[in-house]
Length: 267
Length: 202
Image (cartoon, rainbow over all chains, first blue to last red; front, side, top):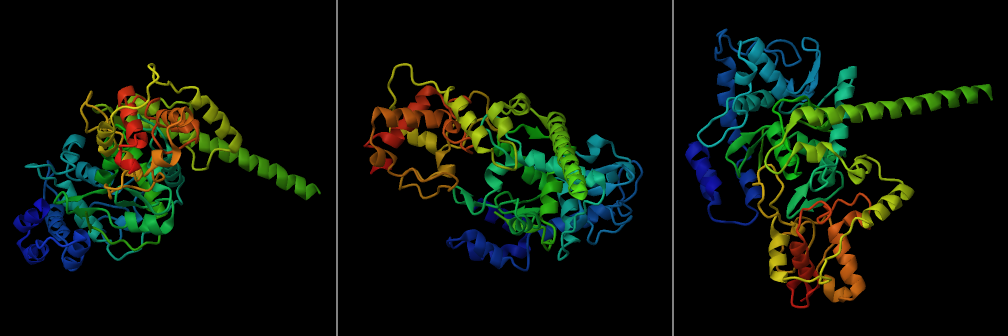
């Protein structure tokens, strides 16, 4: 119920859908999804993200419009469907959140600290990163995931990501694979995708980032991974780190061929 | 014949090469874990970077070969500490609370707060709780089906203490061995499973 009122406050345009839900029907999420089929609250984040993208900012007072996400400066269409990828200028494989941080530093002149400040919004503290990620990813909607492994560094990131996926540790001996390497498994009532098979990996990866009904926010891939690692009883991953890029590379590559559908709507 | 030898030689080289590469990736992954994760609350970095024998053996995409699995099970069985006072059964009501709670040892939890067992995350336990997972088998009527002989008490205790004593690389946490549950908490969970008054056995 809390999330519904949040949507009402945050997005008057969706009020009708939210009100229709207030009847307390079963299978709330499925209905919610259906009602909002033509209007995901994530659209508000996409619009805000576009503004931020085009706004002059930082010590250099320039926009991010010339940011090269892998398909050339300023090319957004389909860029996310090919990330993570190797970038010649940094000689590194980078995922979207890393690359966005890089552009904010190199183009706008922000420090690393400034460019990675508030990666996830919290009560009273909005994030600029979440809307920008929503905007960038929305520009790949309808495009098939096509992550390459042609560069040796891309292959290396994938293989390290795979090792991290199967790495067991911590107080509970968990790995990512503990929950995500077998078909049709559940934690409580929550279905778990088998991220080692194509269909499940595609369905899962191609719908992040997502507007999370339970949080009333658009959450990015790193936010999703952080929460997995938390439940795995692992320590906290550093934002935009190489380890996160490696795991993302493993997941994204496994999702190749799936049509990108984010930012989506999730529980 | 000469061709075959050449092919075999190449195959040996390739296999050796890929094993070495896999090893290198494992080392790089371990280095990244150290560099890119930070201890927070009870979820410390050392707990993850310093893998024990079982964690190391079970970190592969391929299942453990039968012989190694058996050796691991034998070694894990030796770690089991049975209750000092010889009594196995606590309070099933406290056990139910432990089975429901998914708290503990997460970066978001407080250091020193009691841990849950989160049994329902993976198992059906009582019939009343319909929100349960399916990673582990149903435990409904666990005691009713097995009775409470000394052998069953000891086996169940050991399974909770160290699941890998019977099933190498089991995805079930080693609750006693890893100090996730205290001896008293384990007794309470034992009662949930085995006490005839427990909803599990109704």
